Every structure is written in structure tokens, then in C-alpha cells.
Amino acid sequence: MSILIKNTTVLTQDKNRRILKNTDVLVSENIISKIGKFNEKAEFVIDGRDKILMPGFVNTHTHAAMSLFKGFGDDMELNEWLEKKIWPAEAKLTPEYTYFGSLLSIAEMIKTGTTAFNDMYFFMESVSDAAKKACMRVIVCDAVIDFFDEKKAEITKNRTLKLLTYVTGLNDSLIRAATGSHAIYTCSPESIISQKRIADKNKILMHMHVSETQKEVNDCIKKNKMRPVEYLEKLGVLGENVVFAHACYLSKKEIDIVKKHNVKIAHCPVSNMKLATGGVIDWSYMRSKNVCVSLATDGHSSNNNLDMFKEMKMAALLQKHARMDATVMPAQDTLDMATLGGAQALGINAGRIAVGALADIILLDKKDISLVPQNDIVSNIVYSANGSCVDTTIINGSIVMQNRKLTTLDEDKIKEKCIDIAMTLCTD
Ligand SMILES: [Zn+2]
Image (cartoon, rainbow, N blue to C red; front, side, top):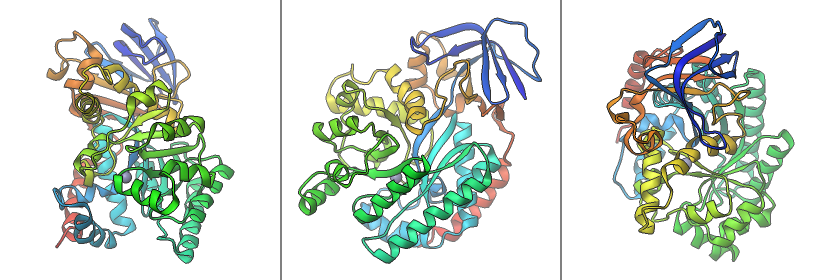
């Protein structure tokens, strides 16, 4: 299919961060094929006069099916919340529930301008199926947890291999598999090493939670006489295909190690604040060392939405507030994390509007009250807008939402189904 968006404002996110006025953008198949002023025919033409065209957001750390637990057990202490609420509810999850919970999240993501996400959870075949149904770009990995038990490690390894086979069988360029380790305190070193080997052998990503809490760091120092990133380096599992979610408690030395191995960071500011972890990512030092930092919402239980506009605002405010410096993390850098940073972290040829890039594009309603007046479009997007200003979402050259209506999913049906499922799962 070809799509032509006429006379629009283009937020390119190119090297010079140019914003082009009154410009046409042509999408051919799944690629952006032309940008400028031209007379070209296309199967589908969109009048872009009242729109802002920009790259879709890349959410680099999610647990999509946790949408089913939205608002269930908020404002509780972490352990009590896990033991009394989340773990009993998760024990009742099925592949079908996971499928619908993932669809609910995917619908929310498309409606708030996200065009790719990096998901870690259970029943990942169901997440893959949901993404395929929606025409959503995703990287799926199992939440590998073995609690230092060899038998469980073997089971999780086999599950990872099974997922790889399943995703390969889908033969869909939008769905990719990754390996994962939940965290250093839930996985044995052998299991983490094994997941990394599978990732390297298959040229795929490895996704894990790292240095989310002070306790995790303290326990690691006690047990291994070194900090988490030093420990992971010693295991030999760092590399450019590794994504660390959180990384709030990295020392400067650990950030240097992250840079040395070109590990990618998925920064989750809302989740960190909501769970009161107290850790604030050392973004300025990471930036000065050119570390790839992307942005992520984490799951609904610690957010409680997947709106990357809100995540950008929170990221910028958290840095300014914590550092007592209003110049830290300016709007453009924040937007870069949510687009270019995410695409780089996940190895997707997107995150910018350029000829040859994948057509993962969103159109914002320029007349939305949050975007008026346009003294500074980037500032408006980061500090003023929210996901409801997204009018159209295009993923891999397919229109998955137009005029805020989803084209690949039945939103009402998904909502109805998820209300029923949540009633079954979220009971005390
Ligand atoms: Zn997480």
C-alpha cells in the first residue's frame, strides 16, 4: 500500500532536528520513500494541514498483560502488594487472559502514539498473537525466573527456546523474540549466562531488570562483593544486544561499564516514583558518556498507563526536581529518548522521519488545545500534550488508527472482555 500525507508539519528527529513546514511524506509499502514537495499518486491520501507528523514512540520496557491489574492494590508497600495482590492474581492468568490483556495495552499504545514495545511477561505466545492481530511492532521475552533452582532454570530455558521457535514460525517482521532474565535476585548466574548465549547465537536482544532498588544493590554487594553491573560484567553477559530496565542505582563506574559494552538503558521514571524506589537515574552522566537511554512505562501496576507523552514529562520533571536544576533534560533530549533512543535500543530502523526508515509514524492533531499556540512544538509535545492528541497511527506502513478509530482491533469488544477477566482475576 502507498500512503501520501500532504502539506503537513514534519518533526523529523533527524541529525539537525529539523521541523519542516508544508511538506509531503510518501509511504511505500512499509518504508518512508519520499519527503518534500511533489506530485505523486498514492492509494491513500491524508490531508496533513492540521497535523504534526512525527515518529511513533518506542516503549522499551513493558508487561502489557498487566493492564488487567490496573488499579488493583495501588498505594501499598511493595512486598505486601506482590504477596497479597499481584502474585495470587497472576497465578490465575491463562494464555487467553494474557492475549486480551495484551490487546488492551496495544490498543492503548496505538491510541497514544506508540508504534513498538519491548515486552517481558508470561504466555508470550499470546502477546505475540495479540501484536500480530493488531499489526503492532513488538519484541517479546519470557520473564525468566528460576529462584536459583536448577530444575526451574532448565524449564525456563526450554520455554525461551520454544518461544523463539514460535516467533520464527509466525514469520512476521513485526514480531521478534528476545531472551530475558527477570533480575539478578531471581535468576541464577548460570541461567543469566545461558539466556545471553541464546541471545548471541540467535542475534536477538536480552532484556532484564537491573538496579531498580537500593535493596537489590545492597544485597548484591553483600552476596557478590560487587555492584550489579560489575557482577553482570563478571558473568560476561554484557553487550550491545542487552537492554537494562530501570538502572536507577548505577554508580559512575557502572555507567562507564555500560558504555564500554554498549548496553542500552530503558528508563522508567513513573514506575520508579510510584514504587517509591528513591533512585533517580544519573541521566546527565549517561548523556555525557553518550549512553543509549530510551524511555519506558513499565507495566500498568506501577504506572498506571502506557502514555509516552506523560512518561516524557515525568522523566524531564524528575531530573529537574531531583537535581534542582531546570536546565537538566531539556524537551528535545526527552523526545529523543522516546523516539531515537528507543529505536536504537531495540535495533529498529525507526524513531525518525527519513527516507528509507520504517514507516512507524504518528500524526498529532495540531489544533488540539494542548498544542496551541505553537511557540515551540517540541516543548508542547513533551510538557503540554497527552496521548489523546494522536489522530493517526501508522505502523510498518499500515494505518492502525485513523481519526482516533482503531482499524485492526475492535476496541469495544476488547474493553468488554477485559472488564470480565479483571473481575475474575482481581479478587481478594
Ligand atoms: Zn518491569
